[in-house]
Image 1 (spheres, rainbow, N blue to C red):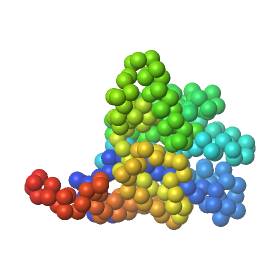
Image 2: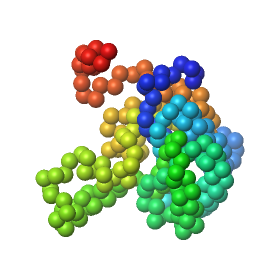
Image 3: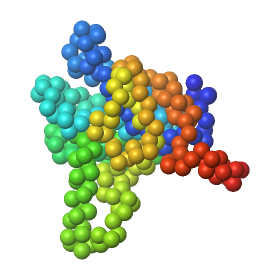
Image 4: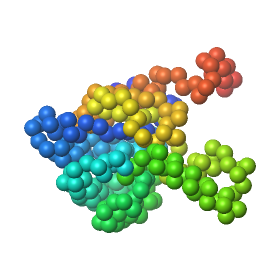
Length: 251
């Protein structure tokens, strides 16, 4: 499958909604946390696969703002799993050139998780192969609300004119200010919705839905999604004829 991919049409930024851990565990007759633990292989496969094809950034929806409403025992287990997994993966992050990043209301995380995340981000900050971003206590509406507040504060303090506010200013005040817009969004488990994820950043993203439950996701599944992406025509509001004309001018 890897050989089928076109090197000149690799998505710069892939976002994944990692869905289906609970259902996967239920099929095994186990508790939901069993599914979360067994999802770590899928994370490794997705990151390595994205790195192999030359993707610049991959962003994983790890924990939403709404997930705090889940049973405390599950939330606590997820936070512990996050902390242990990050520490365990550091050698592989270093080996594979993975720069770790995080977005969301990170101050909501337990202190231990915050500290571990900070340490891993710091130790991998000079890696350049791929940026791996974890979305933690993240919700897109909350992000956009936070962005509006930041911009409003700058206008209030006269450090920014209201007439200068444009899409670039908005981008600079989002959590993802250091990342390119999302080119490809993958959601596993058969669900077909965005679930309050990267709504601004996915304005022109190609959406790919698969019935595979996240713990079963492997790099070949990522390649299949990328192949589908490469076979689509991305028009960004233009017509096919306009794109053909631009291509003729380039060639």
